[in-house]
Image (cartoon, rainbow, N blue to C red; front, side, top):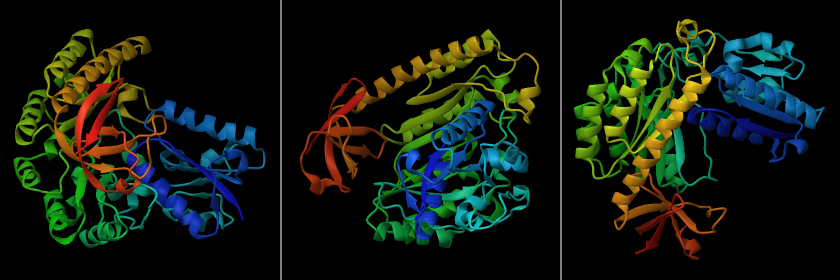
Length: 427
């Protein structure tokens, strides 16, 4: 029996698709191993957001050959889709398989052809592949692929193609299968889930209504959304839902209008700051995460100071921050006034400190409150405590020996925040 080892880079869609790859190979008689030295095949599911991502992927592939010279290296994911057949010129890459093809990866491994990555821009249908990963406590379901935006810093639209939506019946069927197999929560993911339904004359609310009415899942959570996609109608619907987890991740990228314009992001900072306030008013202590890029081309000290002040005064809970990294093939890489790395990194550090303060402030507001937490199937590796996640996305550790609580929802009072860990006690 051949053995495979898989490494995943990048987004939640890649993580979901890696689980599909694993199931596809195991169904066809291959064995997954957790040590690359034991593997016959190494699969790298790559990210290509920046050239740093590309370099990291090549490092992993070279290292695999160094550890095991007989290993077969398979590169899939976004690098494979963008760079295509020329990647086979590298002696440390044996197969190059595109983003759509990887969902049926065994079919390509059993063929003689070592390259398969069709023109993804020609795809107009969502690839409906089922996944049932019972090792996890919370299920992920990819409902959409591709992106119709053309942000100047991003190449992912070239790697993922046009926005394509899974049909409602497929999504409902998958969620109900998750429920039957014991899952209590599903996370709806995709490259740009706010565009779900655009290609089939529907919108996200249409889907959520069907999930409410036609599934038995107890909780659902949404992936990242652009601020323009969170309408009053959507908020009103989510507020009325007993299943929705009040956790939003906003794809913001900057808090300065000049920078947003150069990024091809079509909204104003003042509008999404009002939206953040509205979300905080609509729900009780919702978790509000966000993405911010520092040091995009042309971002002056004054521009960054505006971003800093806006984020500091915002009602966000947490800010995922990273310095801008050029990606060849994007408009941003060709722009003038590129920012030196030391300045980009310094700005990112400042925003990370703001994020820490905001998260600590948010947790303190939750201490003393009792929440229904979904208890994970696996204990914390370090403390051995039970771990649970609240609807508003706080991970809490509980000192309990009761293994009957695994994969159940339990009432937990949040009691203490120490060394960045939230502790709670069972009620």
